[in-house]
Length: 303
Image (cartoon, rainbow, N blue to C red; front, side):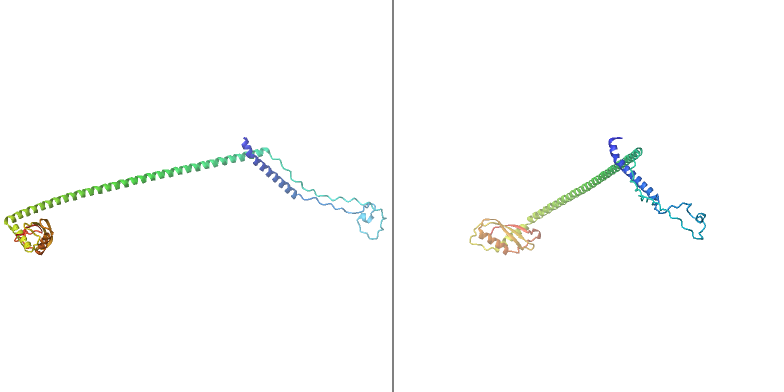
């Protein structure tokens, strides 16, 4: 047996020895308790009488019918010594029983074997528990890893779907913008063509009106009307020429008048503007096609 095992067995051996001694003492006390005590001897006082000295009737066993003469008194014998009272022996304390070394060794071996078996069972249980915990941790980690992979894949799919949706929306928007741009370009082209056509038509109409003399007649009529309403200031000189920018509403009402180039002073300029406002509404042309909302009139008053 190893020293370490011997050190562990000492408490067991001591405990066994103490228990054996206690059991032996209890057994001895029980035996003594069950054994009845010896009867106590009592001292009795009496006189010794010889058989020959007894009367015949006493020796024959018959009752006395007549008085018997008393025997001669004999000297009293010396009193017997009184026996000393017997002292009841006290039970001796139980002596420790020397344990059986082989039995102690067997019990120690059994205790060691049980302790070893318990330790092995505990170690096996702890090892099994640790293995189960490790397996549970691995399963948990694997489940978390799988969940993370699924979540990542889901996020990636959502990202791709969102990217495709955005790309489709961008493509649709770009296509719509291109269509709108093409439509706007076509509309602008059509508008430009229409405006050009109108300008051509207006130009042709203007040329036709110019050829017919209606435009020149209309401008002359306007200048004459303004000149009639002009209050010539003292500072006006001969050879006055002023360019007037006149805006009129339908019906000839003058809405605005400005002067461009003019060789007159400020008083002359203001007098010409006042003359235009006093001429409102301006006379209409003989042909309605010669009407213009914005007029450029060169005012040259006659001497």
